[in-house]
Amino acid sequence: METLIVEMPTRIQNCLELLDTWLNSQKDNERERAMWCTARILGFTAKMNNFKAEIEFTRLGRLVRLLAVRCQDPVDNICFLSSQAVYNLYCILLQQKRMKNLLLCPGRLPLRPDHPHTLCPRRVNFKKFH
Image 1 (tube, rainbow, N blue to C red):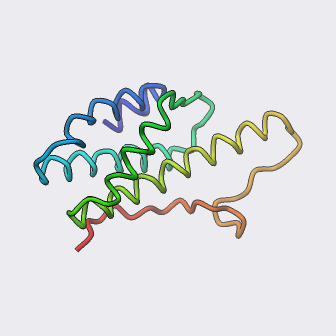
Image 2: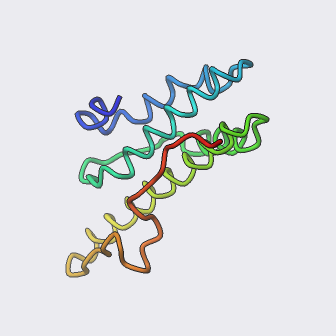
Image 3: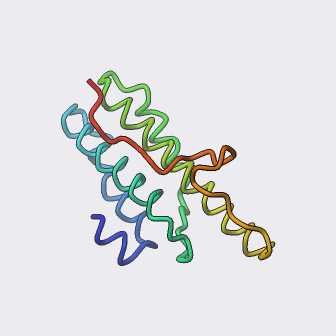
């Protein structure tokens, strides 16, 4: 999946939509696996730091709703992974906003990843919650 995202970053939404069936599954293990993939895709995208290619989430509200529902899942690991996915999605949207601001104000320098006003650090831990 990561190779596909690097080669075609505009297809991220399509990758996430393919997981919808499993994210809404009645089986815990299917939901957990799909949420792990979702968090991984969004985390990889957030760390990619290549937002020259326009990544659009045309169904952003639907994705946020789905992740928010999974934050209340009875399986603790799914809740954890869902919160990681929400955080990574927020980082992506924040980076997109920064890139748009840089295009509007080209003389302005972007914040370094370790700058105190940077809200999303580069390190995101994908270890399973125990």
